[in-house]
Length: 427
Image: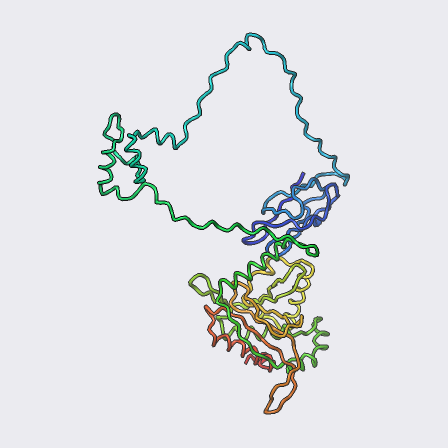
């Protein structure tokens, strides 16, 4: 038999939930064939068969929590026939009771051994006190072990207690005075029972983690948001002009996200505190630009990371974003795909959001929110014209990013997007 073991799931992850078994006991399995899906705090992980054979009995069911290194099943040799059910354990037949010989029946039972006294009783017996002395010790809450007895056999008398109380060392009682009675804590409210047209569904591990991290960001960071708007005319014009040629050469569509990622990297170069993080009473400045791109997956929002965006061209960024989005939809993201980001971009505009305040992705100190492109009247050179406009929102950690720096960052992003040639010329 070969054990099926929960593999190492990544740094700081010690447990997972069994989301789904792909096979049933008795099914034939091939080596490296997916057997079970485990849901961790961050991603879903498939565990493959370590060898070919027949799946034996399962140690855990769907929905149960397992620890890293735990055995969750086994694979045995065979042709796929269902394993024979285990024989139920039956109690061993007891030997027939026979009457004991008369000699043994007449033998008296051994005397019962008295139980040892409780520790409290033993302590009381160890210190002998006169009744009046015991009353004084109890009222004054003194430790009898610290009182020297002068009576017969070391018995503590009333005079011994008075002498001990007059000594300077006897100022503190043996036991603290009882605290003032506190109002009884209100018992936790039981879970609300769903109504006739309601359904109660337990959160998935991923959803619980998302909720915890978002609340952690609100509780930990001094989070503020600043807004600006960008005229998308130049960017839309460039995209329309070169879209077909770009797709023909690079095999990927030209979207807006690659321009925004490049613009953010240029702004991060100028305002490094937005690319930093707080670590205790220190600041860690990062000299690499790994941009997280928020993606909506079936299980919830995930943020895969595009590495070294400053070293990629627009085509490389678009390809990397497309690959991560596909992996998120298919549940194929690995832990390494979600770790190490320095800054995040969230595009709520694809869902029609006009304006929002994005929440930080800890421990990062900045996140840019993109929104819907909408035609709006604006003043240009003293004339009212209609332009495609987008609101931008930068949420930042005010502990290390000042308001001036946040506004400057957003203005630099705006300038790069309204005049894309600035990114080509590194201006």
